[in-house]
Amino acid sequence: MSVVRPLDRYVFTEFWKIFIATALGFPLLLIVFDVTDNLDKYLAKNLPASNIALSYLYGLPESMFLILPAAVLFATVFSIGAFTRHSEITAAKASGISFYRFIAPIFLGAVIASASGLVLGELAPRATKRKLDLLESQTISSMSQRYNFAYSADAGRVYKVQTLHVQGESIDGMTIERRGKGPSYPSYIVAANQAVYRDTRGWKLLSGTMHVLTDSLTNITYAFDSLRDRRFVERPKDLMLTPKAPADMDFRELGQFIQAMERSGADVNELRVERMLKIVIPITSIVILMFAASLATSTQRGGAAYGIGLSLGTTVIFMFLIQVTKALGGNGLVSPELAAWMPSILFGVMGAILFARVRT
Image (cartoon, rainbow, N blue to C red):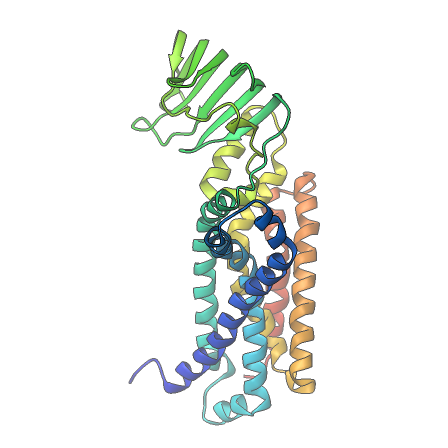
């Protein structure tokens, strides 16, 4: 006997049609608004039409990553609501199929959405960087100097700079950190009193030390008068670029950036919340399913209007709780990781209670 029944395919298809329409529809609607507001700016910069179109394509992963839980919510509410209004769930129960078994394909859809969200969360920072390159929208400060900043570079490296002199093409006080994975790929910290830039040869670090950390107990230290770092290829004006936001880094890059900032004594609670949200937001799709499935059985009371109100209301409340818990975690009132999970835990508990009370 086949595990997948025609009814399963029907339920999954109905859920998936609404899910795809929502997951793509909302980002496309945002694109329409953005084009309306910014097209004149892009044309004033003489950007090719192909660059503008591609930039919106590269912007889709970030938009879809944020909208996936809401897409699961809408798809669950409207698909189960339609099954309820058309008495399809009642007919299934009369045939010996429980409510839980009936919505099993929807649960599978939510799992797929969560997995897709985890993938999109890793792709979005790279796609967003490409989008900014196409639009030439990374801003460079008009100042000729920059003080006390950290710059997240490629290969998990973080530059911490005391003073950058753009016109003089030099740096006073610099540290380069890279997080390793063990003896075969060790962590290292390079600290230099000064660095000078030569256009054809890159940066030369002057008067410093290099610490190679093969494990937690071993620290091999080298002193140098001058050192060339072949990976340090950023030009002085590149270091003036607007620093990456947490949304512009993937989970691993943000973790390395946080560790480097912690070693410099910076407050990283808010960054830790943002990093955990990269996992929490996709997983929330499964949590939202239990909550929405329970309430969706009552959408026959108000039809589509009730479904829209329920979906929008739940989305607004969830986003509000995310902002509240981000503030709690950022201020250190609760663990940043716990703060990121709190809205999902709350909705999960409520969803489990409601789910258990549904007539099966």
